[in-house]
Image 1 (cartoon, each protein chain N blue to C red):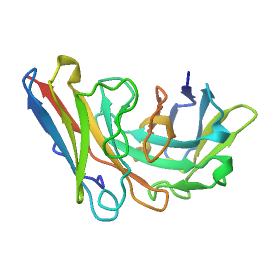
Image 2 (image 1 turned 45 degrees about the vertical axis):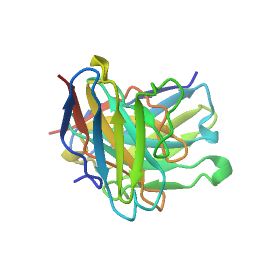
Image 3 (image 1 turned 180 degrees about the vertical axis):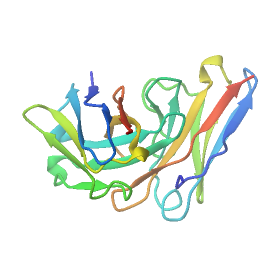
Length: 110
Length: 119
């Protein structure tokens, strides 16, 4: 059982926006600004899309944005494109050198 | 360019042992916080272990499900990260990734190596 909670699926049409939530507790998401998001296409390794709640690594399109409120973090993909169809995982530092992941959300571009 | 190449995955019987390796290039493993993360096919990601950089003490930590059975380590001379896995269980079957860590995130991932535990 994952320590973080994500919806199993989300979808949107090309050009629309989709937001994925990631709910933890006041021991992980709520306590630390070390929430990150990963995109994974089938058969590939995960790719870091957002770090420290809202920072985009070099090369990640600005269509991807992150935020946090209380114990819930969110990833928003604006202007959906076909290549955004993938699984998305959130992760949070949980203290004592421990990290936790969410179960993943499958994003479908309709 | 940072590259991580895992190896050592195999089919092993329950109770057996295996050592995974992760050859790094583009940086030195001693200077980075390194982790192992696994993924059961069709399932989510699970963080397993961390080894801090030498300048941060080089200490290690392991997730509860593998503590006492798995051990993370590194060899500076070979620029390689390891995961020693003992007392393997069927539920350890997964793809194992070698991953760098910075500011609580995992920016660089290897391609993964498959471990199958089955009789």
